[in-house]
Length: 202
Image (cartoon, rainbow, N blue to C red; front, top):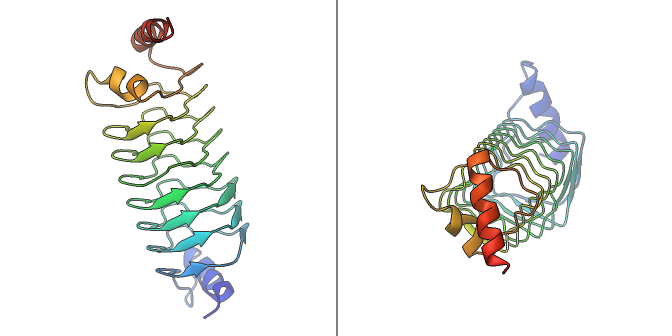
């Protein structure tokens, strides 16, 4: 069955039509760009996506675990509640996406750009974030426990109520040279951040 047929059947499944069928794109290599498509709750485990563009694609609640994704450009896409556990997403541009409550546990997000992304209440536990950019992103209430920061860029991002290991603020944001210039923290944390920045830069 062609990708178009799978998507058409999925649209029918989403609207409750009798002959509709949930899209299962498990283990395939995607070779076509996706534009203005609703793949909410699709099964896409172990999918391979490379050098493609997604534009206005809705992947709410989709299962994208163990995917291998590189050089993806996603513009205006929705990943609300999407499951990316154990996936590798590298050298990609996911700017302006809506990904509230997405699950990135154990994912590799090295060298990926999340500028202006909405990532509130996102699970980023045990995630590799080397050279990852979150500039101007909303990360409120996200969970960064045991994430691996290295040159991670949080410049001008909203980090209020972000969860890390207790008493590990220094380790989480400073030891690994994370950039938090202009980032928003809870008031009691802002003073600690400012104090550490001043001591680090002198």
